[in-house]
Length: 121
Image (tube, rainbow, N blue to C red; front, side, top):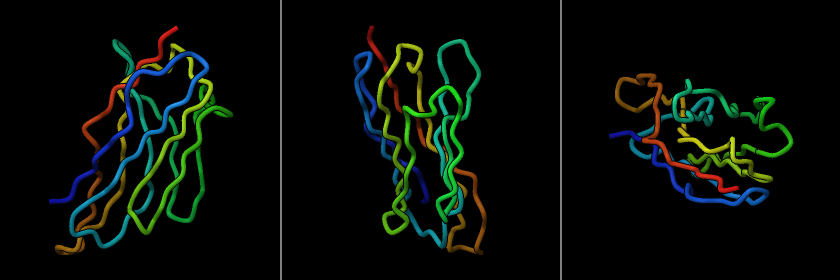
């Protein structure tokens, strides 16, 4: 079974930092783009940042200069370093990855289960 497992959510303070991790596990042939999305209560899911396998990064304007996405291809893991947190960053954060699995070399668009980030003022 191929899945994405997130960790690192929790409660942070305004101006503080949190780091999210997301590891892909299972019989994986390759992973393309990986990214983080978030969904605040009552709002639609939105892109936070994405990173391709070769390191090309796209970051939402709302977090630019505060959040940094990175990945470790050897560990099939993507990270989100969140600095200068604001209350409006409070949301459930979801990891996403384009994964090609060994079985029949199928391409899958995987999502993690989500991790709650709460920023207290």
